[in-house]
Amino acid sequence: MDNQKIKAIIEALVFASPEPLTIKKITDILSERESVVKEAIFGLQNDLILRGIELVYVAGGWRLQTRPEFSEWIKRLKPTKKIKLTKPSLITLSIIAYKQPVTKQEVEVVRGVNSDGPIEHLMNLGLVEIAGQKKAPGNPYLYRTTKKFLSLLGLGDIGALPRIVTLYSSEVTE
Picture (cartoon, rainbow, N blue to C red):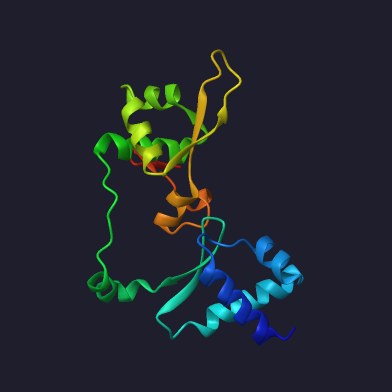
């Protein structure tokens, strides 16, 4: 297949997919080498530079999205439903994001209070999920963030979270 056709197929696949598509999934569907698919993806990104949409890597895969500079007009089209987080939920989400996988008890040690409510709220919103159970007395659940969390923040993976910098006196540590 020629490069233009591969780019067109990838564009259609990413457009039709309800979730970001991984390189592996695209290569499996196209029966092409990974290097060919990557070249086509980067070519497609370049083709879209002057358009209202962009091809971005988020949540471990590729998706088409509108360019951020057009958000003002898109909001006029259809107001988005915002996810509202209370301060305890936001703190709990931050702890889980940076320490994942983490048990409820470990979250509570950092917060200093019971975290049942915030964790349940975050799970209901689809931002946190159970990642398994820790091999420890009582086999407590381990929690991690979801692909929806990464997608909402526009992150490719959890490693793209900003680093936490703590200041002590005049010394900076990471």
